[in-house]
Image 1 (cartoon, rainbow, N blue to C red):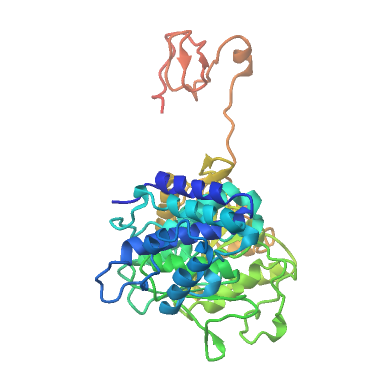
Image 2 (tube, rainbow, N blue to C red):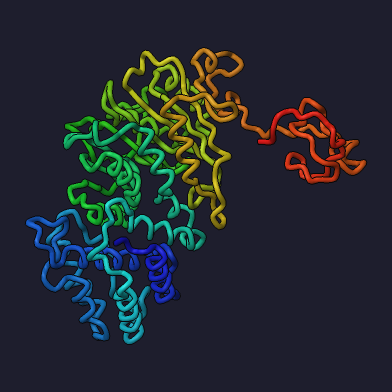
Length: 501
């Protein structure tokens, strides 16, 4: 039986209430997510009879042992030393930097205040509603859901940069499906990589599509978020996933000898328009030869990440997908030079324009660039989808609905032409001087709403008199018409021109 998300969110909210005052949301979320992690692994694996469970829980380091510390005057210090430290020592994928300090007086208070706060926090997660022992979370991103919930409610408190660590699950699903991975083509040796992996949610969606026959690797610049990703991998039975901390552009950690390691699938949601991307890099002397197509602008790092992704894809067969702001499609100067090289290479297979305001921390519209090195030299065009109009409102953010996701995926897989939504655009059209390798979607897909032609005079006289070419069915005079939502002024004997749709 799955845990109800409403119960999970209620517990998270209560935890946040308990921690408010000494720190902002970007800090106390670390405590809340650790509590969720320790509760989950304790319920699932503390009494496990598996020969090799995904995570080893040493004696005295389970959630049950934390319950015994409630009210203890040294509760914070004991959690650090008796719970967290043994977990780190027994699980090589975990590091001290992954976990918050439970004895920090600046964040949690001092003396009785700290004891009471941590005691109450433990009690919140002791709820019977959060019993994970019988929960099947094969495809549930529990930590990711919790992280998204916190970011949704506290993005303003946490700052814009924190909101970029999580890719909404709907967008992750689209990416995982458009790269073409499935259980039939994924084997144990299949590899997937995310150079800016955040909480790991995107990698996990790829793994779900692959049927778990896959090796996962990722790098994350923020040390706390890298820890979250490692915990997330353990929760999803991927203890072998390799998540490393560091700056991917300046100091890529995944190398084979001196060269970038290459993968079957590469996915990413890099920080939009990173203004510090070149720190620690001399592009013209890059040992990994990522900037052979040109050097991105110093204050605009989108193409720097894209070039890293392309270089990390296996030669001839590598596939990938990357979320970038719409500006990469049309900005000029140095980016125009790189974009032309990208188009001429044939590696860019498709562009999917997304609705604005999908991501936490930014409201700007983004797009998915679908990359494929297989048969790239023979590619004749780029398949473009303008999905910017398909979404629902969710508070102050937009979200893709199931129908939006299915439409994107079905259209992409079938390469279906849909007026105002999608079509294959040949390279000859893109290279035409009037377009000059500009990929801005409105140049190729007109998704603007078409205005209904109405008889203004008829409206002024109290009804809508339809021209015979547009009138589909005669209506009794005075009845409301579903086409114009007004009274029909045509006589009852008007000819029938088809049926209403």
